[in-house]
Structure formats: C-alpha cells, structure tokens
Image (cartoon, rainbow, N blue to C red; front, side):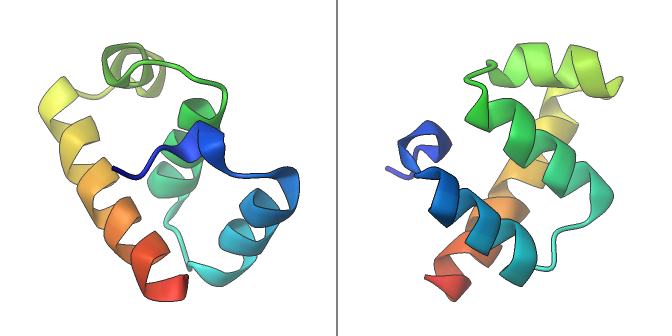
Length: 67
C-alpha cells in the first residue's frame, strides 16, 4: 500500500515537480504528507469524502506512473 508520509523530502519534491498534479491533487498530497486523514482532508478542502477518495485514486495513479 502506498503511504505518502513514507516519502522523503526529496521524494516529495520530485513527485511535486514530475506528477503534473492538479491544484486539488497537490493540496491533497501535501495534506496527506502531514498525515491528515482523508476525512480531515475533505473538510479542509471543502469537498466530500467521496471526492477526496476520487482525487486520491487519480493522484496515486500519477505517482505510480512516475516512480
């Protein structure tokens, strides 16, 4: 299972530069890096939990394509 907080600072910078994240994906990536739950991310981003799950799925696919 891919866990964002497991990435090093260098990995995070690399992914931010190379994954072509949308603004929402980047926001979620950074929140998850700070170990926020998906529910908390949804509240912070002012979207539904199902939207956060959808964004997360697309974001993970981009990350796996880059590494």
